[in-house]
Picture 1 (tube, rainbow, N blue to C red):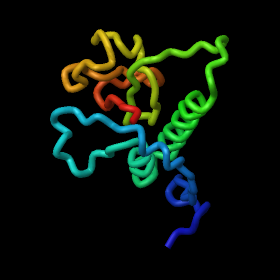
Picture 2: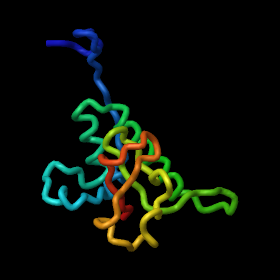
Picture 3: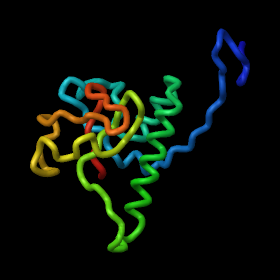
Length: 140
């Protein structure tokens, strides 16, 4: 049995404890039409961070944690009239864990937030450029 920090075939095992804000469960992952019945599909960003940790994608889990914390900080502070934010639909990238407005803007293919997200392709990721492994997000 390997212990944390022990080198095995060029890899280092490590114990990771990442505290994910429970409020990340209020940001829903919108499944694509072929993912709706998938019981393993994360339903929110808390589930997404757990999945990333479960499969060893620690950096992706940390990206989710950081992006959610940044969003919640924006929501918790009253507008000061000076700060500038991009507002629109967000996506989660399953390749890198980035959560935020996609490259090219959130409303690039739809006229408003009420558009049917099943009909509008999400992405690409604003961090890594991934186009396929990306889902829309919905803040509840």
